[in-house]
Image (cartoon, rainbow, N blue to C red; front, side, top):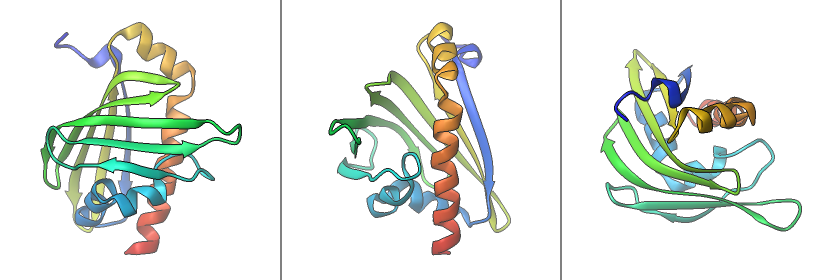
Length: 150
């Protein structure tokens, strides 16, 4: 399973914010609660232990009274550069890895977000379900958050 290209979905953006601020948005629970998830959704931070081996768990109350649960375990952290975590987004997506990389470009930050799936078929299924739109919406919220806090 060394070649992940055929089972990875990647989104990229360049944020008009310094790398330290983008890093904080990804690593501090009070910031994560402001942008994680689709527009109009509230986020509850249940657990957030930002260290290798640490776990995170966020919930979003749904209009039907159920909860959408996001959780995972941090596998790799390189300050201001990279975060790798397992991730389950129940009930929709399970058993993926998120690879977040940041690259300083002057006073801006280039951001690459990759979702690595267990199989190519699962990757294609997730793409068809609208993974790009879902994360795109969250990253638009992140961009707005970054504009408002800098």
